[in-house]
Image 1 (cartoon, rainbow, N blue to C red):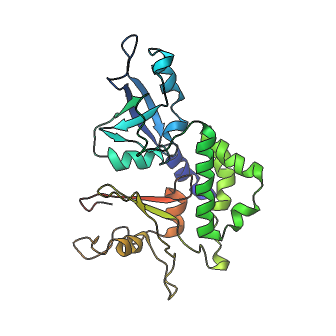
Image 2: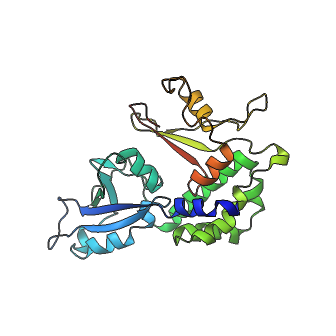
Image 3: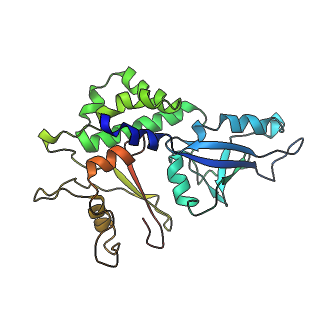
Length: 264
C-alpha cells in the first residue's frame, strides 16, 4: 500500500470551503458575522465545528442556547454521515463556498440524532468500522486489534492525523488473496430522490464463476437501467481492491451517491 500513499493522502486532505451563518430566527445580542471553514470530507460535522459554535456563542445569551444543529436549504444535515457524503448529496452542483445554516433551538427530533458529546461520534464511528470488517474479514482483523489500536483509529480521525490513522487502518484494508479476498464489499448507495436513507446489500467481490466484480457490476445490479448509451456500465474497469482502498471513508464503507437524474 506504500505506492498508494499519495492518493490516500490526497483523499484524506480533501476540503470543502464552507460558510456558516446563524439562523435569522435565533436571538442575538448583536449581529452575527458568518464564519468560514475548510471542512474535511472524511470527518463529521459535529466533530470539526467547535470553532463555529464558539464563534456564534459570542453573540448569544446562554439561556437561548440549546443543542447546535445544521441545515442546508431547509434540509437538516445528519451529523452521522461523513461530510463528503452530505455535500455530494445536497450541494455538489452549487457554487462554493457551501452555505450551511446554524441553529441552536428547535432541534428536529424526527430528522436528526442527538450528539451531546464526541463519545457519541466515536461510538458510531467504531460501530461502522466493526460492521465493515465483519463484511470483509468475518471480524477477524478488528477482533485481533487491541483497545489501544481502536483508540488510535479514532484519535487519528478526531485530530486529522493521516499517518496516525493509516498506520492502523491499513490492516483493515488488507486484501487476503490467499483466502479468496474480501467476503463482501461494504458499500452504501445514498439516494437523493428517496425517503430510504441508503441501499446496503450483500455483494461479493467475485462472481460464482470466479470473475472479479467491478464497481460497474455493483451499479448494474442495484440499478439495472443505469447503463450508458453504448450499453456499458459506468466505471466498468474499476477493481474493488483499489476502489475500497482509495475511495472509502474512514468507516471503511464505500459511499456512492445516486441522483434522481441518473448520475452516480
